[in-house]
Image (cartoon, rainbow over all chains, first blue to last red):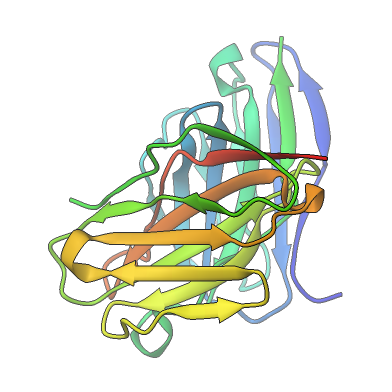
Length: 116
Length: 115
């Protein structure tokens, strides 16, 4: 099925360990972003990318790195995990602005990450 | 700055009741887009509707309807004859044209429909 695929769905890390959350989309969307969802906070954008080779910081980028080597993939890396990064992470994609600003973002199913 | 406020944190209704979820947005832009997403207990985010700032026509889709009022900066969502399957967290979100494609979410309203 076409859409946004996130892996893994669940993971437990120890403080200080590193981890990469994977995001892949097959809709030829230019815009990809990572959000984290925390109770009572809604969704907050971590990093985003408007095209391969271009990334930028969102609202809450500290502790996270991203890369965009092609159109399809947008991995999110935690270099040294902290308990404050326990959250549900969503990857979202959409066509990039100009003609398509009114298009909705399509979300993956989420990755539930716990850091002990 | 953009901001989306969903004042209702949790709502509980009995099946077949009508329920309205409130959404108030703030923006200085003249062109913007409003969205509603549903997050059922399974956790995924499901797109429900988009509304452009220049289109104030209200929309109905089955038991769902949306009331966009620019004068009060509101984009409320009504479920008619609610069903247990409507139980979910509902998010209102806003995006401006151009910029960094930032989608600003409200904090969500948790709707519980009891049988």
